[in-house]
Length: 456
Image (cartoon, rainbow, N blue to C red):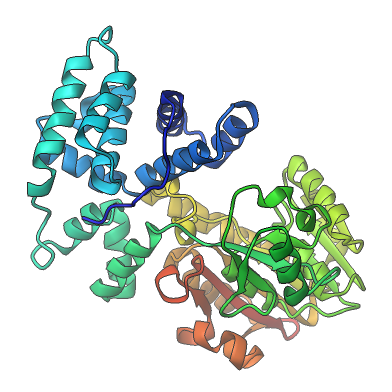
């Protein structure tokens, strides 16, 4: 089993207690790891290597939780599902060390003892369980890949079995599903987008290099860079001056599908914190108008703050109660719909353990409602872009096909016809856009472009 070699030297025990606290909060309190880590690093006194260790362990354990739990259960007598979450998390930390790092058995056992001291009634149990894992981890037999494909992929690549079954039915290629799940467990790159209002990728690359952040251009997006160093990227002069935003390459590409041009009137229907609105403003060179709709006032406030840093002056923010005044006026309506997030498991590994099959049905109903509601804002000849960061058929192809059947005033535009060089490699059946982690090394996105051809 591959092990991640670490150059991290001495690590204080408080580092592992921080990892434990975050894991417990994620599972027991349904907190989000990125938010917890941000708060911890803002308040806590951790060295750079300790921060790296915390991030590695938290995300590594969340990504590989299925395999970790299987090894624990098969290498010891522990029934992980029946244990107190604190005890479960301690054993997971030590098992992750045993499977994915070069930590010594003595160091792992020492960590187990420190995290669960003798005063704890489970201290002896934790020690015996970790000893069993260390002793037997090499002898664990995983489900047979040929005889039990679902169980094998689910366990070995740490995805809930219902998701594996769903993808096997939709992709119909077991090897591709396995590669997708494997890719979801890799550390994603730090991808940024240059701000067209202030710079270009070449100048941005030089600016970041001068600040100690080497980078390379993205494979597909003409605006993107992959930065080799992540720590303190938001403290750079380049960021403070609004030269870039962090944005996955797949997200950049679906924004480009909008085809926004200077002078147009564009609506960003589910703007969130505004990453795509800012890109649209750059593509439009601040000429024309973008109206960003969002239901959360805090996100709109964050969008306005980010727009100020980026120099994006043509963005207006609005609540959904203002929709009707824009009926039939938009050159383009861009909908990045709320979704299950199945395309961003590599960035949000906790979400694959939170998600339930029933959530997909609820989300699909909401997505259809959003698409219907915002489609009314497109003027004849205008464009309607529907996008998600999921690879669930019910939230993507099914939504668009049903919409087109019920709304004859719209016709689909194959994405390869918009720009063959840029979107040709992402075009799937029926002309839809799809990016995938295991194929493109981007997050998983879906998009459909439609044109308003007039009344039904």
